[in-house]
Image (cartoon, rainbow, N blue to C red):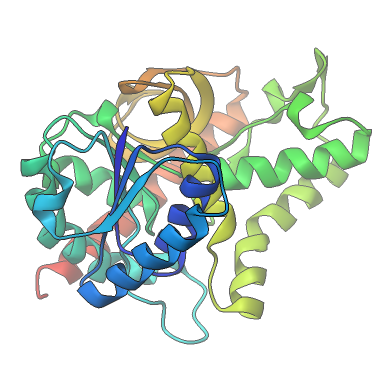
Length: 307
């Protein structure tokens, strides 16, 4: 499995380290707009590799080094302005970045599966399909995967079970318009009721990323681990179910927008979209999320055209 990472900043370097420690690549290629940063990261990871039992080739390179990559992870991003917490502010700059970078990488790795970790992830997932020419199922964003994991962890603590035994999805936008699908939430086959306490938990999920940004200045490790899970599912065709951002074509009536929905992830990328049972309130929340992301897409595209 040949994996390429575009962008070796905080998220990209954390993803690279996770892939090395988990042994998910035979060949790992790193790209950065500042080549010396990628060179330094590759050398550091090579030294870390010496402490493991892994056999892996790690190198820095330009676009040509990504030739025939099986998976490419987009981690490149402009930084959020100091003190800012709204991911959508990155839209114009990162759409322009995607437009300038992705066509060349897609040309040398035409069969790659593209995993989007940069923000705003739903906006970038949508436009990455256009920028690469890849079919939508081969472009998947991390979306609400981290949000869902946070919510399951909180629910598991409340009911006293292992988080892996909780089935609860956060869907919609990776941002303010995300929502929990409590109609389908369960643990051990037992339905988890939608209570005020659990809605308060979910508000903590929504605010968690902002809390990390305010304290640390950025997020990196959780999204990198989420990205590694998606890459693992592709590498080993595990066909696990994850909530990932997908460009939709009729899912719950929504088209021409990317939102997080439960999906079966395997060797081809997104193998199938799943539709959990939802009540009218949740279906409306899904429509509201589509409206929010379309507004963000419009703003990002307009802003990117002058860059």
